[in-house]
Image 1 (spheres, rainbow, N blue to C red):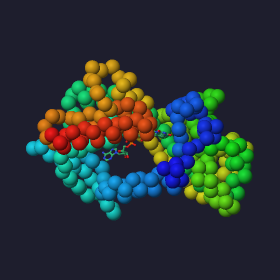
Image 2 (image 1 turned 90 degrees about the vertical axis):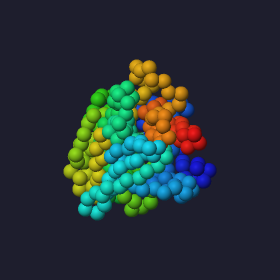
Image 3 (image 1 turned 180 degrees about the horizontal axis):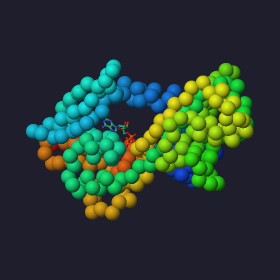
Image 4 (image 1 turned 135 degrees about the vertical axis):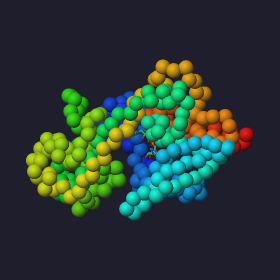
Length: 284
Ligand SMILES: Cc1cc2nc3c(=O)[nH]c(=O)nc-3n(C[C@H](O)[C@H](O)[C@H](O)COP(=O)(O)OP(=O)(O)OC[C@H]3O[C@@H](n4cnc5c(N)ncnc54)[C@H](O)[C@@H]3O)c2cc1C
């Protein structure tokens, strides 16, 4: 994907130190998706010839008579409609707190999964008039991210300058900044982010508000996993990072980064393990 220009590896020196991602050389590789993550996913799906349905929430999954049934609700105009699907194998790749809600788990597994923890954060996306490009470029000094709470604990943690990621600096480009809150801080508007940016850019918050074209707040209740399975005291032993439930014909497999590591690598390892288990189950 790097060779095809779909992904671009970010020089480490452009990234900020964050509490989730320490900058030991070579420990992390951070990539930007040239055309956005949505484009990459659509590409994967079309190459895999898979049928993708978005906007469907699984409410319950259960095994009966060698088949797994999943019931859920799909977002439709003005409400939700019920959906149901059946399969020989279902891989449930949702965060641990959601998996506990969807599947009736053996008591021991449910209690282990309840010990897996996530942090919570707010991300505030801010879109500014292009005149802000110059002060922003001055403040970022060639970086893509700046940590706000490196010296003391603050409500806000990190600012990322999105234009750097796709090199959209042309005259008249809208300035896109994303401000992340610290762990446990919930924000419902752009106010605190504008205040923090005002300090960083040495401009008044009122001026920034005037230049603000649009904003979006994502209050991320179940954000990054901070306590994985491997850090829990348990006698449950997994030979690989996915859990096949039951031993009858129809199988539900629990997959997710929480079985190993909070990263795309962790997600990939669990997905590979789940795919192996699904194939073995289908061949039985
Ligand atoms: C702010 C942030 C920054 C991160 N940065 C990096 C990074 O730079 N590098 C890196 O490697 N990793 C990063 N991570 C971690 C990485 O995103 C995760 O480790 C990875 O996405 C986990 O993959 P997953 O498939 O296990 O779960 P997820 O990606 O969380 O996918 C689970 C999906 O299940 C859906 N879902 C939940 N409940 C239901 C339900 N009932 N029915 C249907 N769908 C449901 C959710 O909407 C979600 O789409 C970051 C995470 C966060 C939160």
